Length: 189
Length: 189
DNA sequence: TGTACATCAGTGAACGCGCGTTCACTGATGTAC
DNA sequence: TGTACATCAGTGAACGCGCGTTCACTGATGTAC
Image (cartoon, rainbow over all chains, first blue to last red; front, side, top):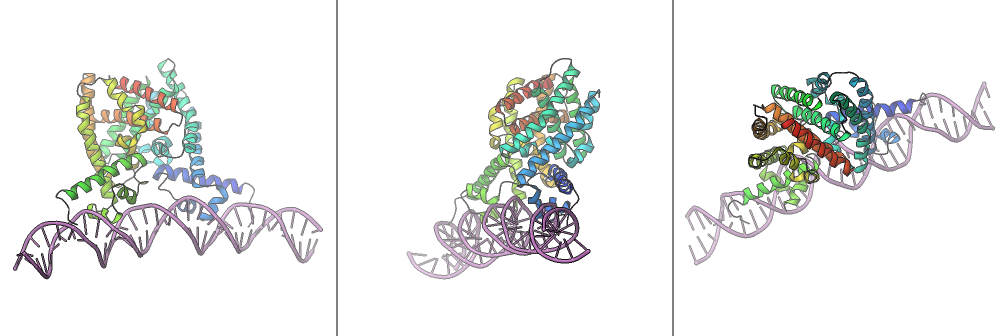
């Protein structure tokens, strides 16, 4: 069969989107290529006409997810008050839907154990978000907040979300999210 | 061969210690039983005379690691100033030696995706540490700090350590640790 | 207008490998008689 | 004192399975002549 122009890009795109979701939901190691390709309605063999290796897909999925988030973030931080920003990150919805959520919270620990190339992709495409956070925090505090401080702020958000996700008691998990909101507000202002 | 009394316990113990280290270093999924048993100087078959399954070992290793940390912590927090406590957690040494480090930072994201039994073991054996942190923070702030707030504080520490671990540029990673120290001090006092 | 060939995303079977788990067996030492 | 049997941590080979990766092939459509 012959394919419409852009068919290749569209398929490649679909594979990236699907894997990005699955990686965040189940972890990178737990997601096999067969599962990704089946969700894309294709067989495994096709994978290698689009990507050099699983590692290459991992990097692609990471940068896509991080870039997409950054695009949304710049807009979301525009004039938003601290509490609503922090509360939407540390929400039960975000906790319960890791697949559509923050890649840092879902994958940072696993990425830390990946090859340098993966870590570099992660760091490079997380940097714009950290910069945007730094600018936002600077505005809130009325004085210059550096990238490292913004990263620590992101660490608080991601770490607290992870703890909430690992806590089996729902009321306790909700309370951790609330405490995270309080802590983040204290830190941001 | 016949074995000395306590030999069974000693072997079981060794398997738990070794796996606890490897799990924190490489992640639970990435560590096979063959690797654990080889490090213990045994063959894989022996594993099942000591544990029902890999999942059972995971729970055992988690509770052991968390209990051991809690024992050390109560002593470490006794009269220690904020900065030295926080700085020893967010140290380059801790970042670079995950195998001997905090199980929360190393494994919380992976545990969140494990069966409920594992999450319950994790939560139950992490609770004493959170309580000890809450008591310590209460002393520092001069007013009652709840368990959820202490958990958020632990979230800041673990999340920041994870980000530092994933950051390939060493200077940048060091700066994140320093920023984490500042944030934790602000939050604790 | 008709024929031959090129293109290329996708197929599907196979590859070696490591995984968790099972199981018949070993063999040094203990106990029973 | 000597013999028969019980104990039990450890052995090592095998199991089915899913993994990432490879590769000869397909087949609908495009282009060349």
